[in-house]
Image 1 (cartoon, rainbow, N blue to C red):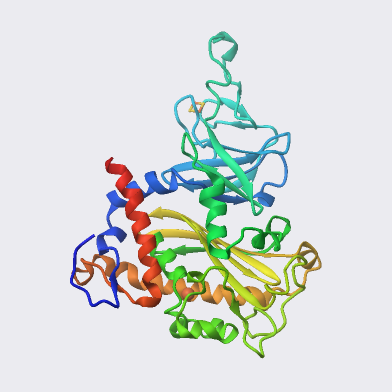
Image 2: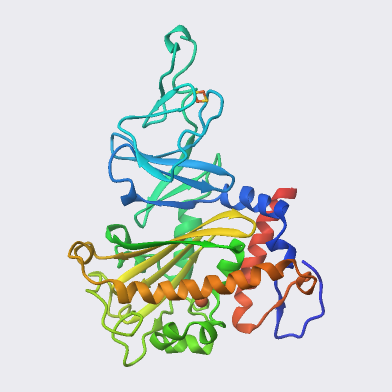
Length: 376
Ligand code: FES
Ligand SMILES: [Fe+2]
């Protein structure tokens, strides 16, 4: 980082080049997204054996599917013959195998090579050895997390640990039973901004009073600019006359059964580095998964999760969904407003973080620490 003489109340951000440099982005892809646990797919999107989704993880396309025994499997989406991408669509379903469209090498749902033209004349081809390349998987909060590293880091430390650090106790997220909730609504945002701008935005609330009128109405303390995320265990309290976490403060839907009295009428936000945001409110949970596709482009898939019976009954989720959809649109517009300026000479040495944003400096140090691994 550049050394600059700064007044004591501010600290430096990353220089603008960190948001525009293709080489740095490639290093982030390798040393962050391809090295850590990555939240890829909602497990319920893989309803039956053979249902699949393809997702971009770092520089790799990953095929996530459900095997015949009901377990979730993930593979690099690359044919072992001559490298054709097996599936190009975002989601779909196969009956019992993935057949490569090029020369018809065929893999079962466990990734084993089970058929290929003239395969019997090549008895020395090992079906597992020439099967699809496995990617590590874990299921947590009802999502399939994948890791491309040969030796994955500890899921408990890296993923669950982030929640523990933020809430003070990982059990507190258990109260929301996130894995059993149903997807009431999903919105996919294509954001023309570097992924770090989106993380930084989510971590601070200095902007809340300026761009989030509906949110600060529901959570009056956010108007003060202090992010709830910087205080362990703290959840922002709903305003006195607010009935629910909705766009107009109206009552939401039925509360999630396990939510405690302490957690009622409160909002908790958690960042699970590198690409997940969790928002907990008494009657729903909002989860963002980011897919950084280019140095200046990030697709964000956002799920609104409610009790299964609430979704099944077709209850009106509109006012609940609309609140955070507006927050998302407001936030992403702000990120897109910053992205073009990252290459300006005015921002070559970066900007500054005010006291209520200082914790973003910890995130920057973390990113730099990951990049430093590239040079050792
Ligand atoms: S590249 Fe897939 S079968 Fe040839
Ligand atoms: Fe925001």
